[in-house]
Amino acid sequence: MKSKNGKTGFKIVLIAFFANLSVAIFKFIVAFITGSSSLFSEAIHSVADTSNQVFLFLGMKSRKKKEDLKHPFGYGQEEFFWAFMAAIQIFLLGGIFSIYRSYEKLKNPEKMEMVYLAFIIIIFSIVAESISLAKTFKEIKKITGSGNIRSISKFLKDSWHVELIVVFLEDISAISGLIVAFISIGLSYLLENPIFDILGSFIIGAILITTSFILGKEMKSLIIDESAPPEIVEEIEKILLESEDVKKIISIKSIILGVNQIFVAIKLHLDEKIPTKEIPKKIKSLEDKIKNRCEEIKSIFIEPN
Image (tube, rainbow, N blue to C red):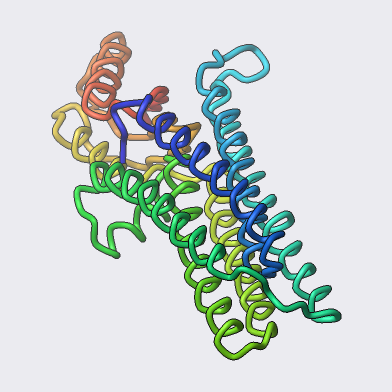
């Protein structure tokens, strides 16, 4: 689950930022020209996504902060906090506002003008979001080794790469919302009934709220000290059992401290024949082996029983 290139995540977020910003501007312009409710909701959607990239930049900046007396394990989890804030913003700014706007439109439905502009901006937006999604998917595939639904689902559940998780979910929800907008505007135009456009706005709001809950749930798990992915724990067990000095593993407890940062506390039985004065050397040797093979682990505490 480790990404060896820290600059990759920054590049992905930067691409998403400029894509969402440019799309948001054009959506607002066309939404006001056409009077489309669903396109206006999509513009709000893009604003939420754009500001979320700012939250991600703040979180990624926290990786560079060094540990101090108040935070002896560093500030890695601050990145999870900013991603959680992004989830809340999608919910408030994107979802709730879109639904509120749709409710207001229901009171006074308006006929859309120059609908072809709406279709042009929607197609343009789908292309832009698809490019961003393709790049994000490529990075996720590098990490998981596979691009199937099962591996993607596992990545979203177990990964600590918050920038990829946020951008991936943003792009999926954005493309889904754009498809809804395309269909709803098309129906309103063909049937000459603005209610379909307003209904599309409601659905887009619901998509945003659903996305915020999924993202919020994943970030909550990381914030409250989620354990390391199972494959890393299994690798630690394997390393320990390879040593003749280890007779039994009592427990392995781990905490994700940040992106590519794990703390591990291990309790085990060492061979009773080992002289007391040699125990610190044996423990240091085990720690070095674990760190060499599991680069994500930054801190280890081994307690011999």
